[in-house]
Amino acid sequence: MRIMIDLAQQGERTSLKQLAEHQDINQKYGELVVADLIRAELIKSIRGRRGGYLLGKPAGQITLGDIVRAVNIPHAKSEDPRDAAIEKAFERARTAMWEALDEVTLADAARG
Image (cartoon, rainbow, N blue to C red; front, side, top):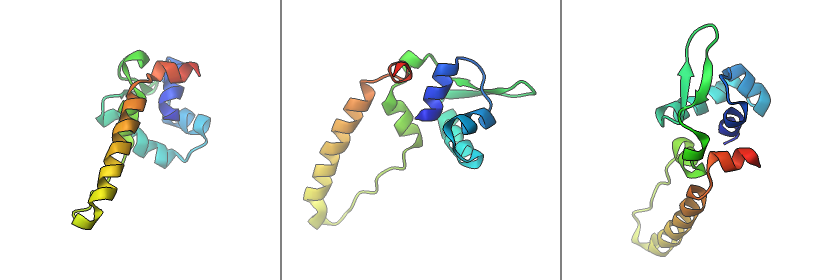
């Protein structure tokens, strides 16, 4: 999330090294997150000496839900019938979470 907010606030090409320093994260971990965000077309990579990363579309068109979906590990559902009530509760919780995250854009988050 913070990498995306950083890119939205920068508004210009930013290197992975700069992003990692700004967010105080390991650069290797940053590579993994950035790869997921590129696959989801939320950011784009500019190659070359003056390369870096930019948002893939305007911040107002990206929701927090889009970002979380891009980097989130899917929940493994239980097939055990004894877990049906638990699974139903988690499904309601996930639905509420996605609705809340989809209401907030990256532009909103970048403004604070």
